[in-house]
Length: 74
Image (tube, rainbow, N blue to C red):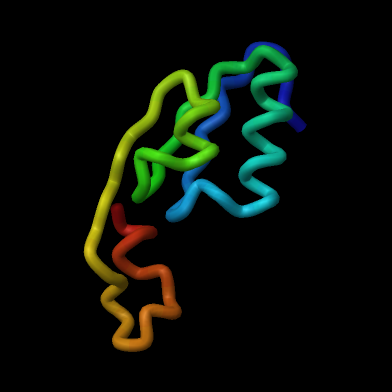
């Protein structure tokens, strides 16, 4: 549960999943500081964040690009 003085760090590759968008809106509504890390600058999560870290990459290390390998290492 998010407390009033908590800083929220949200990490997402796309920054566009329904869960992460809801978390961003809730965090903003509660007045907490939101820090985001995404592979995209132009996403909902980045727009709602107080601070944003851009972590772009070309592809996942997994040959099928299903396992979040590169993105989770970043």
